[in-house]
Image (cartoon, rainbow, N blue to C red; front, side, top):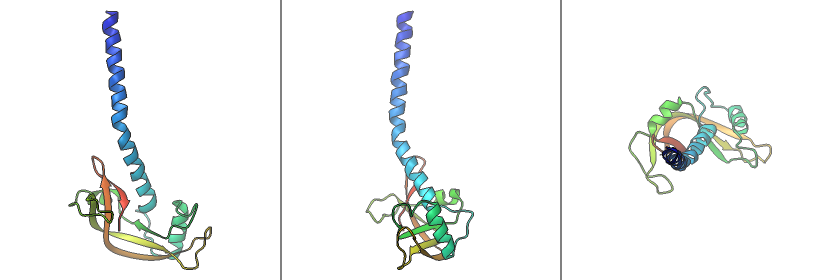
Length: 147
């Protein structure tokens, strides 16, 4: 009886360790998804002006060590953005085939020529345009803004 209980506990321990090993890769993917959300998703805002870019780039920690030269904020619900991941695969700039495209409302923030860290300054450009994002995982989630 004690031997059977020992084997049961050992089996449970092995399965738990295997489960932890299988979960680990999705942790990295989740980190990339969280970074994508922080850097690119702003559904409640409409953006479109320089003050928006200056504030959001700072709030989203893209001016902490240096001025990020360019960033795009998507003004859509996260479920609409995730829906892009279910469209046909296209080639990313890096050559991988895990990119997808769709049309979204965006604000592009481009660093101005006079901008110098730590006083990063940006010029805004709002539009509705085609975006390309890389998706990974099962279910697929956006992990990188390609273009």
